[in-house]
Length: 248
Image 1 (cartoon, rainbow, N blue to C red):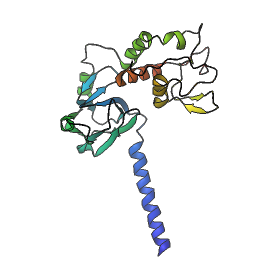
Image 2 (image 1 turned 30 degrees about the vertical axis):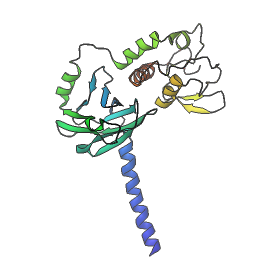
Image 3 (image 1 turned 180 degrees about the vertical axis):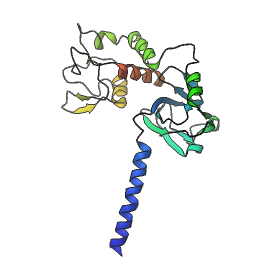
Image 4 (image 1 turned 60 degrees about the vertical axis):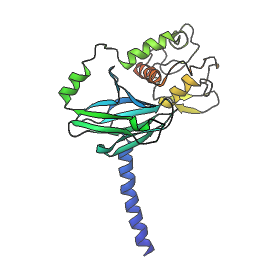
């Protein structure tokens, strides 16, 4: 009997684990959008430049990946009609993905008590046919993408002097950096993902890249979560420097 129950348990575990992994792994062709929770609103940025507050426009029939963070306290992004909910945490990025199958307007809630006006932290997900979505997406007057906004911010903050000027080279090269391994001064190797880049901007002395001194100042308090996402988009957009590759 115990062997039979063990087999049943393993079968249930297998199917449960597979469903969980599918739910937590966004398809490679998913459209990535960025969500910042703040008392008491949802702020959305589209890579092409559109911004929304308490609304999220998505195309029907295409997977959408949300990269989410919070400016203040713990929130929870909840779309009941899609049966999805995930915590949005300060100081880190979480991910959620879904695919709308039918056009319409669906309720969006914060499912984590986040303060006195928690009940007002509501919005809508607007699912549109592809043509309508593209028309909506191109209806913005400013064509500045998140990467373009990040490039301007990168220059305004003075980052070009260390990270883009090869005659100085006081900081690691950023071309082709995103998603690649980074060797640290203490012997560890980490991946240059969103969490690493965010930490490097806010707490630059936390992980020192091999071959460099801890000269970079902190930008904590100088850039907000939306600007961090723009800087992230810019760094991700950088191609590989043919003269230096991915090495500092």
